[in-house]
Image (cartoon, rainbow, N blue to C red):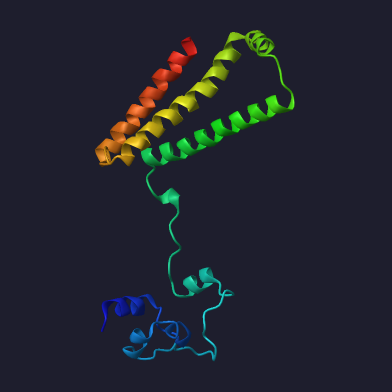
Length: 177
């Protein structure tokens, strides 16, 4: 028997006549007809089947959730890379739309910004510079991965720590300037 046919049989794809009829002619002739054995007259799969109840009836466990796995640096960095990208893009879009709706004079905006307390200015710089540097450095890290370099576990973690350290250093440098 053909190995692809055996795989299809094990996966349960060749059990119904309906699914069997969609096979190429060569595969149909070499397979015995298999039907569902059921106590009900119509045992074709439907969308009305509650898969959780069916699994419970067979004693199958539910699929595990992410919370059972030990969190890893790569998870957090991937999620944070997406968040920073969406946040920075949203900030640029919001500022562009604000400027398109009501143009303002940049000198007045800078004067209003520097009239704020120093702590608020530093907090604002950190809120923009931190995600910017993280997203930029992590993007460079991904470009390096695209070349096939640093794809070992050790390389992924060392480049991750390098991105985190570089983000901290460049964010602090941005606060000083």
